[in-house]
Image: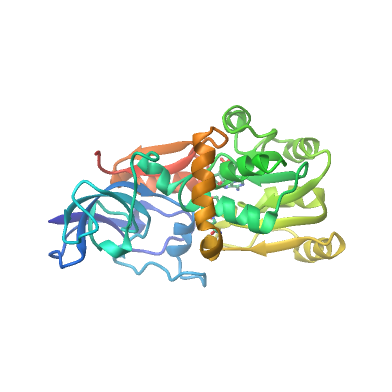
Length: 339
Ligand code: NDP
């Protein structure tokens, strides 16, 4: 049995190029007791993967050159030497950018295809949805009638942040790139206001959208959006620092004056709470609640989700570049096999 993999073969400088990856066919090992042979149905593409392509110090080790790119997948079991799984079962795995893999059954989680579409285990009911839930409720702590602002708001993290904020009685203001995404924030995701960060009068539009200031800024992007948000923060505002996607492909420090002293002064004078997090720190205390709440919210229609499905493993590098540049519209998934 063979697998087709996309391996990382060079460290990208700036935007990842096709030449940083290689498509390689390799043989898979024989199954041992406790193993399953998996066929990948969906591969999740997530912004954190850009960090894994680099050797810069981070919370996880970089992908070694000449090995398969990492990533979460939804797979079908096609052969099993484990009592817990049978051919035809669908599981959540971490097999990376490839078509097939051999995994230990204890390292995968069986999914119930009757409970929710299997792809949602990579999005709204998976790591991105949990990131929104944990970061917003643990650090943002939105209160009734407060204003929550989030950018990358049509993506899997941002769209969940805004909708959970509304469920908690707060006002949700989404920032997204372009009029079509802003329309979806209002019509599909039920945000109270939407602001286009690409519009020439973005700062004015944002100020108009938050007449009572900002109590929670869920930081997904950094850069110019964060600069526009900072003057609008209320006293005691909370800033869960989730991601800084505007800088993931950056090759040098931002130009212009050093903004750090003014930002530190703002933290002091407005009693701001700024706290970074990596979602898995909330797993022990919040994961079960997340699965229960989010499943319920999807069922009763209070949380909507959107997926951007690209067909074919070979299209993963381009889809990944597109996601960092905002060309995706919803959770980016690569469909590799059909059921
Ligand atoms: P998305 O699907 O939302 O994709 C990223 C989006 O970022 C793009 O679609 C684009 O949306 C937006 N973007 C890119 N550049 C800029 C820019 N210069 N200014 C404003 N927006 C920009 O990604 P996810 O929902 O998967 O992830 C959102 C964030 O959450 C990322 O920063 C990610 O790293 C982080 N994250 C953090 C985790 C943690 O544990 N801390 C876990 C999971 C995700 P648009 O077109 O609207 O501008």
